[in-house]
Image 1 (cartoon, rainbow, N blue to C red):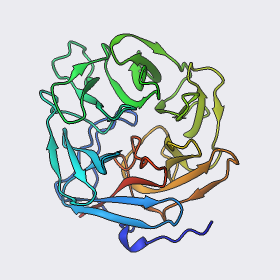
Image 2: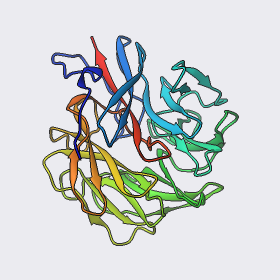
Image 3: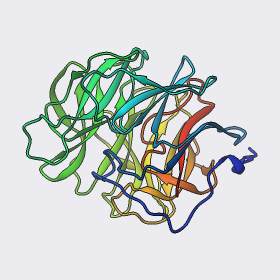
Length: 316
């Protein structure tokens, strides 16, 4: 399969840039300079063609792709919709939730949106109090799901009955699940080090995630009940946020080209990589570009599994 990059549409790597990031082990609200420029792209995985949907001097993050041909992104605590044809941002009403981070996504029927909102009124003494909420995809008042903070949404099971997320409890970040109706959470991972980015396979069999349990951030998967963990990548990159395609043939993930330990920083040399789940063959689907936190935190595949959305950046 021949891949041709339209690299002119991607921001090339830059050096000497001043960066700021508020990092909570891979999830959280990024603090960036006001002169950040965001480039919203779509990428065809078959041809390698990258199209830039929008270039804007605003820090946008984490696109979800709705079947009605628009993206949902966050910026500075708010959520926005971006039609792929019109390329005009419109704020999505989220009620009191004005501190939304880049961990949000669609229900299997595309009628609901899960968000992660920093609830400053939560009685927890923790400095960052992200909780998971659900609201109608067209906007509305959020309903809180998780009791414990911080909790960062990442996946929704194909049958719609379970949410998967990363949560910090007693100083360690692990993967948990919970019903969309709330209730008690279930802990799926117990290893030392960060487990993050859980996303369900299209058939609900697996949860894909990234883990530092070996001392290097790699891509893993486990059964949906947390059993039989299996390492999938073994290279020198720091690999984050695997997202299975709707047709269950691929996973895409972001690879830092340097060892970032347990950090998922904004403003680093990164690339997107694609794994064939049948053969386990991995290939680059972008050149190295300037990105990281906010590029592809959440599921961003097109419904036909032919394209995905991501963000690259420039900071002056």
